[in-house]
Length: 257
Image (cartoon, rainbow, N blue to C red; front, side):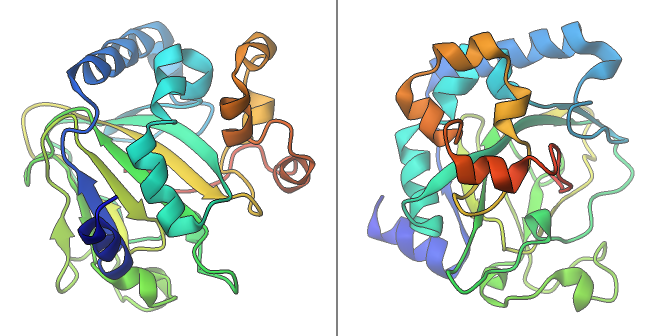
């Protein structure tokens, strides 16, 4: 990480790593996600949640080596650890394709309704831009600096669907990745373009908090058995505390943009 990237994460609450996937990884992710949308059909995303005006996929760690490679991307992990500290784990890995001509966006929110605690920040999201993010095709809107306010928008804002002063749009070229302190106020916007807009979301949390999707229960046994020690650690598969935290709620609520 550069000093500028650290300052932007600290002060603004997000940073964009421009074209950091590389073309080969970008192409492989797009291709595998297209295969899964075709294979899963109407069931796509059902492990997490379905949504009007968007197509979803969930539990992606279980569905291809390319996803397991992606969650360990060093530049992303470095940014996540800057936000959360060294003790992190993957909370969920999902994809979302915003339908064209979408009618509405999402309300402003913080992921999992999370507020910082006495140890600090505990959720961090990453937005993998598998298509260009433009002002018209449903980019995420964000309120810079709001991660420091220790408040949820629904507790303060009269209409979380309405534009908020000083909000900015997350735009960038396909192959870029935005790392976002997920305590930041943010929301997906309506895709007003004529084409779908695809993103993947690798969501991380601090190790002393529950995963949004309990990876140990979702991953097939043969997938778990083939994982490297580094991946097993990132997924908290051998962590008794994670079992205690997560077993009571396999799939937890939350927006993904």
